[in-house]
Image 1 (tube, helix red, strand yellow):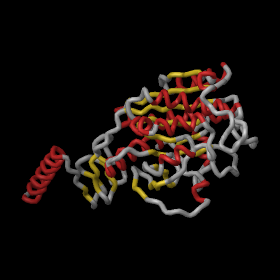
Image 2 (tube, one colour):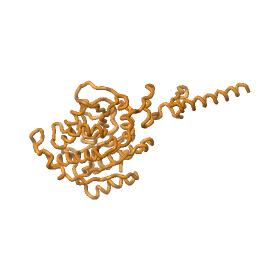
Image 3 (cartoon, rainbow, N blue to C red):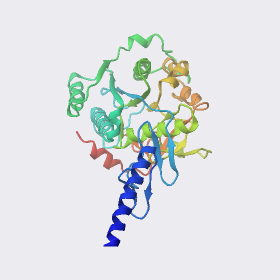
Image 4 (tube, one colour):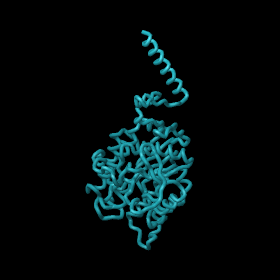
Amino acid sequence: MKDIKNSKKTSFLKKLFIKICRKLGFEIIDQNSFEVVTSNKKLNDDLSKLGRSSINLPLGEIKVTRKVKALDIIIRTCASVNMLTQNKTRLFEKQKIEYTLRTIKSLLQSANFEPQLKELKINFKVIDHKSTEENLKKIDNVFKKFNTDYKIINLNVSKFKDQIDKINQRGENVTSNQISNMANIHQSLLEAKKSEDLIYFVEDDYLHKKNSIQEMIFTYERISSQINREIIICPADYPYLYTKTETTLNFLGHKHHWRKVGETLCTFLTSKQIIEKYWDKYVGMCQKEHAPFEKPMHDIYEKELCISPIPSIAVHFTNINSIFGLSPNVDWKKIWDENEI
């Protein structure tokens, strides 16, 4: 009986100790039971708390000083154009609308994947150029299936046409498809100025893993808090990043490793502060077709940190041979099938 009393006393003291640690904000790890006893979680569970702390064992806790308040997801759609600058077909050789619908579904799934994301204001906007009424209805149906409100903006290219140089940096005529693309980017930047905090600019042929939004938001808080600066996040691990050898910096994100990159395409996440700070650079990309097109953004990355994940958390579904498309070491078919409409 004496042993039983001692056991009860030990259990009571343990519970009391755990309660005190919780109140003080400490996490207690029991490596024997593989548990974080103060949180009732296993060690391989998600231990980070949005807006408060980023925990990655065995490195411990980073206090979040750069709390994310809101996220605007701006999707640029154009179901009438299969490929902007190429005549080749995409992987799986479907109509463009199929990639658009799966992109939107993947984003909605990702935005609902992590319960903590409900603490964020997540707004969806679609800037569309010349999609048919039938395709716009299909887009609307995807949002309805997820019971998610969104704003659709029908792009008025004429509003921006006079601001675009008709001869590009290579001395060639700018195509009508490129003009509409530049107008769409310009409109998305204007929408970004209305945002409260973070903006994710997305093209309509990027399919996302279910943890993509969670990984970007939690990683943004973690790394921005560490370096005390705003950052840019590219969710795709592009194959062209491996065509040359260059030095980089490595970062530990939420659940992925990330590396510093000096080049991206036009799908990226950043803050309203960055957009406003480099407004002329971003708008300049919409007024002159550079070589490469994203050159003004690459100039920004010489001054601000831009990171890309390894492995990729979003895949650009282009032609199988495109160096700007399918990320290496990712199960493309699995991501495609997960987002079937």
